[in-house]
Length: 168
Image (cartoon, rainbow, N blue to C red; front, side, top):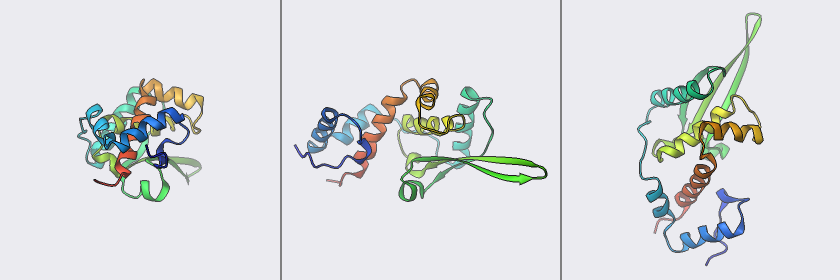
C-alpha cells in the first residue's frame, strides 16, 4: 500500500480511514466506488438554472435570510481560491442606507458533478447567509438543510481525490 499517496482533501480524517482510501486508490477502484454510490448527474447546467435551484433551497430552509442578488458557476474558483463555492456580501452606501448584495458562486466542476455534491455545496454556501464561521451552529444549520451533510461532504472529498488521480 502506498502510504505516500497525497490526500489533500482528506486532511484531518483518522489514519485508519485514510488507509482504506489509499487501498482503493492503489487498487484503481476509488473512482468506481464513487460512481456507483452517486450515479446520477444533475440537470442544473446554466447560471439561471443554478440561481433557481439555490433560490428554491433558500426559500425552503432560510426564508428570512437576505435575498441573493447573484448565483453563478465560476470557472476560476478551484484554481485561484482553493474553494468549491463562495458566499460574498458586497456592501455599498445607497442614499443614506447601507445596502448589501449577496452572491453565491459555485465552482464550475459542479456543473458535471453528481447531484448530491452540488446540493452539499449549495447548502454550505447558504448556511453562510446565517453563520459566518465554520462552527457548531454552522454545521447544525447544514445538517438541518441536508441531514446526511457530513457523509456527502466526505464523499465529495473522495470524488475530488479521484479527479486528481492520474488517468490510467
